[in-house]
Length: 301
Image (cartoon, rainbow, N blue to C red; front, side, top):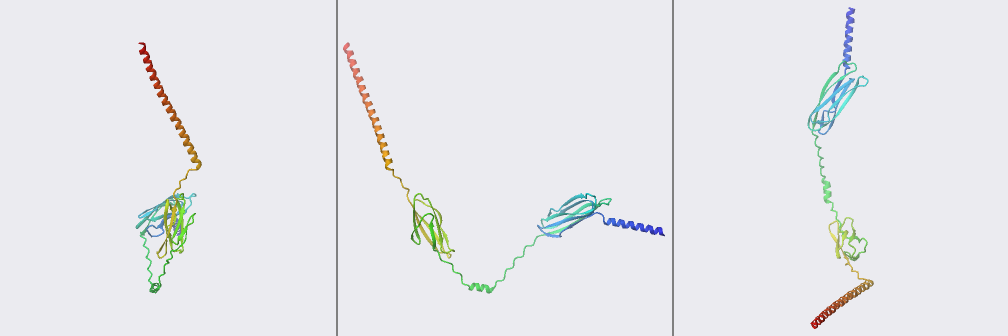
């Protein structure tokens, strides 16, 4: 009877040890951070490996998703059991269902062979709802009545000029709306500056202006807040180009030069006349000598 009891105890201890060792065998599991997301959202897929000294993990996904894969293999340096977690940051790209699958194996430090594991998870992807429109506030009749009864603010009609000038010159005022200015022929451009009395009025026509020779009419317009306009006219006269008369010294010099040239021409003409006369005299002399020679020959015979 004692032998049977001892045998029973031995078998019970073996079973307990077997169950205990199996409970702490290497394993792996798959999880996701959420079961539903909107298009464009991201979520995390995680694999937890426990009680393993070596492991190999593969996660793949199908459906409207990117960046949702895990491929890890490794072991501990000292061959002791450890727990590891591997993650993937998945991004939903469209509406539908994402299926994520796990396959792998792990071996514990005391395991004779690897433990294989698998698993799967699904994530539903839907379109992000449109934001709810902001409710239109109910009009307050009392405020409307107050606004209707409130008199409309009158716009300013002040279109008077406060200041007007031309950079580098002094304008001559004829009256409130007319000014004049004369500039040298060398002045090709002027710069006009002006400002209005009322800050709500606008001023146009100022700035750099190109001048032609003669009279130039320039208009400056001051427009009041209520639209009424006031025109300021500036007549700028650009002088004609002046011709510089020769100086007395230059005139005298030119006269001397002309006289010298005339004398030179006269000498040349006289020389030509003398040569011409000498040619005629020589020709006549030759003819006379020829006639005399012929006459002498006739007398001989």
